[in-house]
Image (cartoon, rainbow, N blue to C red; front, side, top):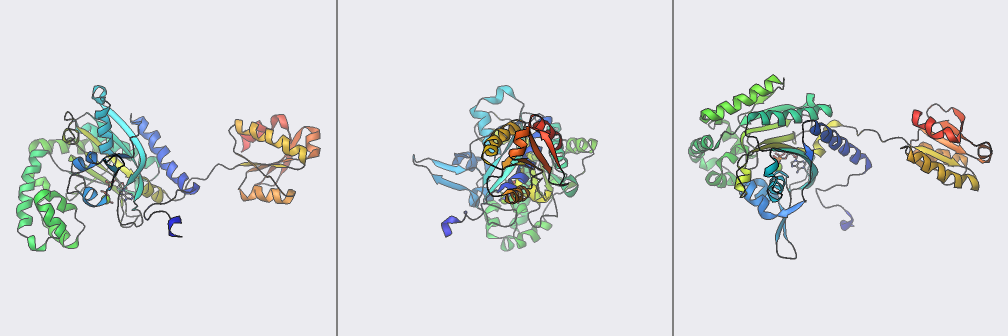
Length: 414
Ligand code: ATP
Ligand code: MG
């Protein structure tokens, strides 16, 4: 039945997926905190303007990918396609400027109406960090270093390449924009329709086009680095010097522009060849114009976001679940006693399951099926003696353990 299928591009996170997912978020949260990024969360929907005004009205996200609807009160609402605009909105709504610099970590679902494929979903999940306040390139270094530490924490750093570029300050951007428009205007006949549109409104975006014909033209387009003013060059040099001082290798990619409108200076992506076409796992940059553009006091910021599904896929097998202890009671009295014992063991932070039904053989089979580490056998004989039969399901060895010591013995061995 069609309506029992999940919506295209969404998927269930079954326990094994969830373990992989949580491995990413737990590791990232833990590492981010070492860098001073504390977790926060914004609502998963906002007024549409929060995104429409900031991401740029020519960005793919705004023109094609947003989940926008009118709510019952007539407001235009959008499911967040990314979290930087939401964090910036929260920074203003909560008057956080008085606490600047602010450092945030977030994790949660994002929504984009995209063509679903491997590593590209309509509901996907991101982790991210935002550092709001400092205009210094050292902040960019710290944000990138935090990303590196998280990738290392996940044991994925070696599989990624840091691609880096600068988009310069507004003055450099205007200068570059002019030569780009000149260049592409001379090749209008070869530009895709999308890019013809971008030519007027945001020619830089053409550099990011996925159209084959556009890509050919882009190969010979003027390069941003030739149009950077001195301040922009200095900023980029301070950034790369900082990365070098931390032994963070990078590749300069002059064609790297970020898909969203609010970036300046630093743009970067951690990419991998191990995931096919969807090779960008973490991406970010500096967004000094964002908060001003949203109507706030102009405030610089820098951050990145990473796709949890892509990171989790790259990391491979999810970490194993904690193996349970299974209680195997035989007889009415033992069954009652077993409930108490299970509670006591859980209070000691052990994972405990009950083998509820069947003969001894069937209950032991259940223990094996749930991959239990130990079975605790409770029969009339054991109860009479105040012990349990503790069976190590890996070695097959069984021993008698006084009930009073059970929790301790299991805690030491399970
Ligand atoms: P792409 O070029 O792959 O569309 P993007 O520039 O749109 O990426 P960002 O907005 O920078 O992506 O998002 C940061 C990260 O979030 C990406 O690098 C990727 O890991 C992840 N991501 C983005 N869109 C999706 C999606 N639809 N499904 C799964 N992960 C995604
Ligand atoms: Mg995209």
